[in-house]
Length: 359
Image (cartoon, rainbow, N blue to C red; front, side):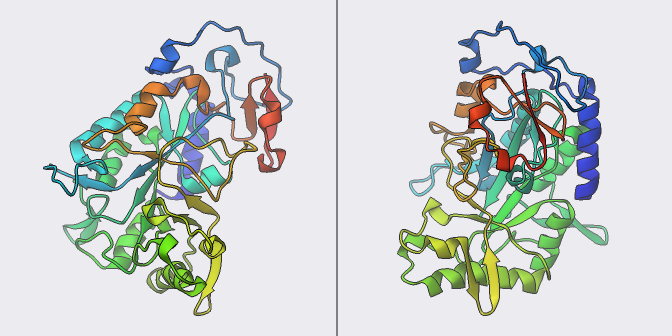
């Protein structure tokens, strides 16, 4: 499905909020259980047309927090070892269960690019979420033959998402894959260009993770950093002409202490690169893209729950982050709706042409 069709579908769903199941969806979190759910909300008639929603029920807050989830490895089964206890590994079955759980809780996927541009198209009452995948591992995605064509392996994260999308199209089929083009990328059938093109054609995004997954804080020169990051963009142009990478994920979560300006932008062998977004290694949700606190060059992520759960992973946040703290959509792509008293938190320059509605 093309990105245009996905956006059109999102808008259609937003206009038919009672079909979405998100309007006023409860969150089964400890934090919600401890909060007063009976507060009175006075709606102020906005100056632009909105979907016909009950603001007192939906209680939209488009200045709330958004979870950007960080995935790494996916496997059928796993045996812990002294070298790997499974903190960064998810089983395929657990991933299937996760998608259903997120859907039932009212989460809907958006792309990283849409987060950056405040182009969040999910139905009223739904909560946007971003999926990111680091390292280009085959469990995330690999191709297998299906007759005369190559398709995503159903035993991969992408294959599982595609299957889920068939029965839950309003959940979204979005994600950004941060790869190292100097190493193995989605090992399996097909060529590297075929693998990347498949993802791009499905609407997924490709991000920069350096050519060889270096420790940026150990890089000794600007030239070394530009070779790793600019070399990745150069290689991407060779594999998929005209595909410009816009986002970067810090390998090992480590920025460069003295050369961070070259992580953001630079030039390698005549190829320029500029990262509009830089992803941290996860520990907490990011703020809304309309918040004055939003920094696209330091986007916080939430670590996906692995076989060995840890504090502040996704399951932990699902239990401890209240609905009231999160970004709750008003269902209208032309407005940003917030509760009264939150106006001072909004960066008007980031509204991206949308009307600010306060209730």
